[in-house]
Amino acid sequence: MKAVTLHAYGAPEVLQVAELPMPHPAPQEVIVKVQAVAVNYADLLVRQGVYPMIQQFPAILPGEISGVITATGSEVQHLQPGQRVSGYAPAGYAAYAAMPVAGVIVLPEAVVPAQGLLTQSLTAQHLLEQTSGYRSVVITAAGGGVGSQVVQLARIKGIPQIIALTGSAAKQQYVRSLGATHAINYRDSDWLQQLTNITGPQGADLILDATGGDTPSRLVTALAVNGTLIIYGNSSAQPSSVNPRELIMKSARVVGSTVYNIPPVQRQQWTDYLVQLIATGQLTSKVNSYPFTEAALAHQDVENRHNTGKTVLTFPD
Ligand SMILES: NC(=O)c1ccc[n+]([C@@H]2O[C@H](COP(=O)([O-])OP(=O)(O)OC[C@H]3O[C@@H](n4cnc5c(N)ncnc54)[C@H](OP(=O)(O)O)[C@@H]3O)[C@@H](O)[C@H]2O)c1
Image (tube, rainbow, N blue to C red; front, side, top):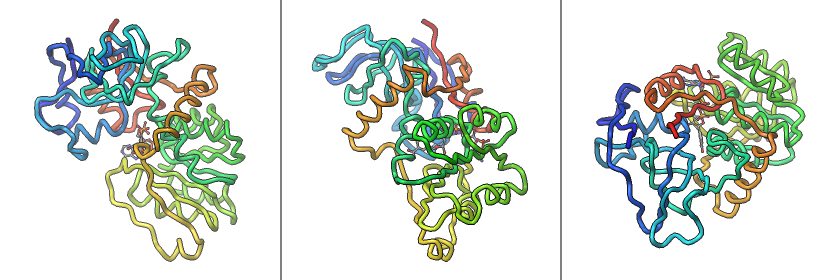
């Protein structure tokens, strides 16, 4: 079978297509014929070695997949070949991948493979549920995978003020189409002024940032008294700092968040909710598809901020 492999950590060019043997299922695994692989930002960090998850090179890049079960391990009882599923696979960037049953999500017919890649939606749902009673939310990288889900879920929740920060005019247009009440290009030199003009003296109740660098400390200027800044990523790879005095004066809090710490029961409830929203067309994604042979280009485009919505690799039927 074909797979996207790497021989060392590094730039996108380390991703290469190779011919490898088919995987066999361990007792608690299924084999999935992969139709789509999510290019999640975390994949870039694994490839770069920021998340040093690879035990031995050469390796198939791990990733989130969706496809059809072709075989089940000897101890698997509740899943069968032919079922459409998604989830995380330790060697996911491949035409066939072994997936532990514990993480398998069964997809209904109405959810196409790319839309069944749920990590970005689940991250967005988790972020919006970490505080309550808020009337305004600010989101950076709002035109990306997680960001575009935050904008839509905030609209579905009825949050009155949804302020989307993005890195291009095209992404501004996209987030408006998803329901953002305001869209700002934070490459504009006066973006913070534009933001505080919108939030006014009251400030924003909830601010979500995954870019890092000096952005979080600047965003605190627009935070409300008793507001919450959630830091859930660091796409700029630059260290962040926030002035404690500003937090004290606002009785504000800064918290970190990861989708990987959601308790299993909660994860299942939110997964069911998100699948329902996707199946009924209430939650969508603009999908940028690349053939798996162009995995390096897909990584490059996300790294260069050229992506809008969800980026996926496809494998032929
Ligand atoms: N904590 C968690 O559980 C969790 C889960 C999933 C993802 N994440 C994090 O959430 C963020 C978004 O993930 P995603 O998969 O949805 O990716 P994405 O948003 O689709 O792509 C990354 C986006 O980040 C923005 N960005 C800002 N500064 C950047 C820089 N210096 N270099 C590259 N990109 C920059 C770009 O959008 P603009 O050009 O519009 O700024 C870019 O398109 C990532 O930081 C990821 O690590 C965290």
